Length: 424
Ligand code: PLP
Image 1 (tube, helix red, strand yellow):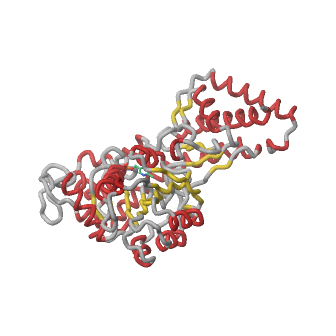
Image 2 (image 1 turned 135 degrees about the vertical axis):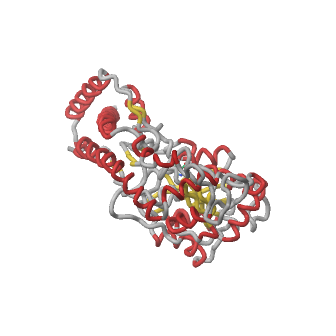
Image 3 (image 1 turned 90 degrees about the horizontal axis):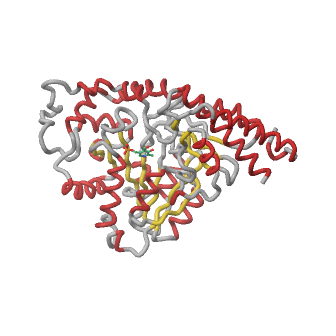
């Protein structure tokens, strides 16, 4: 029965049942962690061949380049061809770089701050104020990165089909200090939302008060499907050109959750003008990326279908964990109407909204019985969830049994905190 309809006596009884369950959990001495979206060891093992690739004597790329040497700032063309197909970016406009797309986002921001984009009247750092729109809940590292540079963050709501366009379009059209916006278009972190083609088209066509406004299109989960409903990456560069803003979008992606999170390959894609701008700064930082790593990825994947096949094997390992999250939340919380949560068809996270004002308490309670959850508020700029209700669940790393045990604890803590609040 919904917690809202319970009288004080029934609430008291719910509270004592959950307290007893909580004490029982404490006695079990659990040590579980569902904080970070890391691939599990079994997922890393799917790419075990990488450890012996490209193999003895195999170091030449398709055009005969010795990958062991300096050079080739753009990255190996055969790897860019594979990801051109998967990310919907022309090969000539796609760069393959080091292991982290977050580093590419960081460097892009640094260059924007120090030099500005081609159409900027001055470097962003010379502006009195620089602001970014941040769809929430969102990826915590996007927010901490901006915070580290003193860029102000304005939250906008993230919906199932992308960011709230009325909020976004209104702000971007009128405030010239808004220079950028984050977006995880496919299976967003943490909601799993997928930006629809209609929303993408409007984002690319909307007027912007800042002539150098940029959309940071972080397609980290472009091929990370959890169901047969496989959302394809949209040809966002053509959509941007059709919307009259060919230079608006900067695309980032990586193989961190395809092969090795610590030793993959990251990609940057954009318009010819933005790619030239990117390379004009990159050339001072590097004489070329790790092409041996790129070559071993080419040997592992062979082609875009090789990536798709590997991602299906990831799905086989991940989908049961997401099923368990939904099953436990549905069984334990459904009857009490104390929470809503997402059922993503891809990506790495589930976003859980508990009773307003109780998320921090839930995380504290879970910690008390040995379950580490992402800090409440982490998915919001400055770590502040104004309603203190959102919790990000990352089920990829622990085993299915551990995910189940952690979710049982989480459900007990959500109910306990909800009953405490209702009786307070
Ligand atoms: N972007 C998003 C949305 C993520 O969730 C993550 C990792 O969790 C990253 C980027 C990190 O990417 P990389 O490993 O390529 O730096």
